[in-house]
Image (cartoon, rainbow, N blue to C red; front, side, top):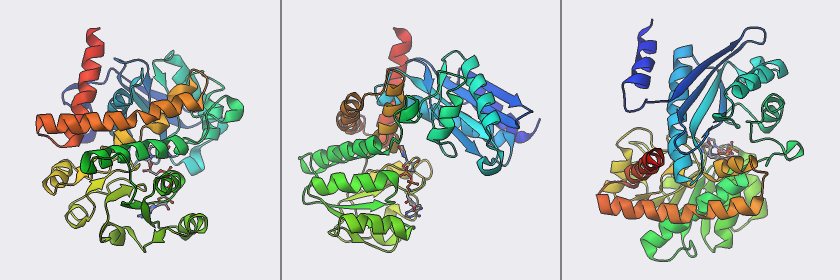
Length: 360
Ligand SMILES: NC(=O)c1ccc[n+]([C@@H]2O[C@H](COP(=O)([O-])OP(=O)(O)OC[C@H]3O[C@@H](n4cnc5c(N)ncnc54)[C@H](O)[C@@H]3O)[C@@H](O)[C@H]2O)c1
């Protein structure tokens, strides 16, 4: 066995990052499917988390990613107030070349074989149309198209949830739950970011944006000429008078280079895994920058897919996503009480919720 596999098994069985209830390796040679389904916890209910389709360098790397992502979903779902534990699946290979109907159907049969202990959805490399195919083999697939009983694109509610998290930041910093009169920088105005811009403008904020895709910037400026665009994220995070920075592009936005130069008083955005490495949450706190944990404020999407299982209702979901405001404030209060950064406080609250559910 390679060192890496040893490492993964060590993670699973020995480390604090492990403790997963079940890990399933799936193979269908006819279609080329190789997948890992990792169920981290079902303490709060069936494990819920998307399927990532990615050309991993090795099977061991894929397995490690599945374990890590599944664990993250347990925390996310717990803090979103969902009756779901955490799970995640990865399909190994390049979706551009490997993805086929046959493969997705084979994958659906594996999901089905778990009898509802794992509920899947979209993630990097899988889309609504793919979940429609998976759902032909299992009722435990969400993130489907409205034509197939699904809720479709989740970015509307994700943006709404991020906006609620940002209102909580404003309440914490300025004693009023509004961005009115504040300057907010949005890095990445794709599916989520451009909806967030609309919420912010409606609330009376000044908005500065950037995006590597010229057409994404153009779409926002055409609709909202009052928005200011800057050339890149490096310029955005140094904007004078910036109150809030909203990373809405890729992960790793907060690192040893960006944190020291941030002009914002708060960070609250949709991007997953914003903290590039452990310790960045402390660097932010040391600079008195309030950080709203990414996995808490971007939970609108998972709230939406969870709702699909009960027949999607937009208003019900919106009401749940609105609670991200309260949860974010609860995290800030716990952080203050325990003398820890909000990211640590969030993890503690999630762990408490899972532990209490196990006792019941
Ligand atoms: N869509 C959802 O419901 C959802 C839910 C939870 C988390 N997220 C996370 O939120 C983030 C945004 O998701 P999305 O669905 O809007 O994706 P998207 O691909 O539609 O938008 C991302 C945007 O960021 C831009 N971008 C990429 N690199 C950049 C850079 N270096 N600087 C500036 N802009 C850059 C892209 O051009 C694109 O316009 C992702 O990290 C995603 O994982 C999304």
